[in-house]
Length: 161
Image (cartoon, rainbow, N blue to C red; front, side, top):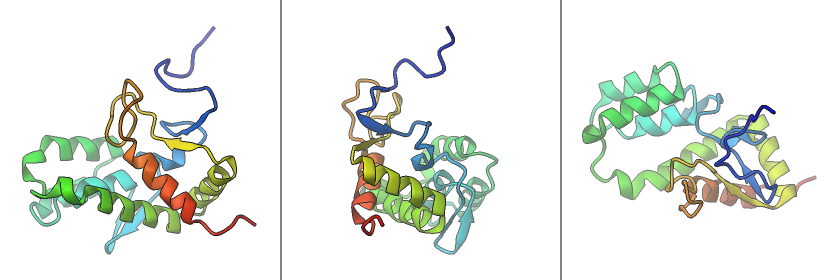
């Protein structure tokens, strides 16, 4: 039998996972363009990674915007971490929330999926086994900050008609 899902991912149906599957739209690597602070970004990942450098290394931020994929944008930022804003760790949550609010407001399909998530009323988890800050990490005990932002936005949605 062919196994299509990573065995480290949660598939019980008790959470709304989005590392990617039916709620893939919540993933920052999903191909939904975002207009943020006067710029158009191919994905929310591009916007988030570029935001680290607009003030400190604008040429690098521009290169990140033009990256061919969200993964390439991520890698460029990771390889140049020493050039990012010094206070990045204190502002990154609010910047991510701003970017996700823009993504939600500008992409009707993302809003539709968040309304579906509201009906299901389950925890939204960025169930990446690799990231225990934005997701829940390998041991499923991480912070899940991305999921928390999506749940906050879900709670703010108007009543479902």
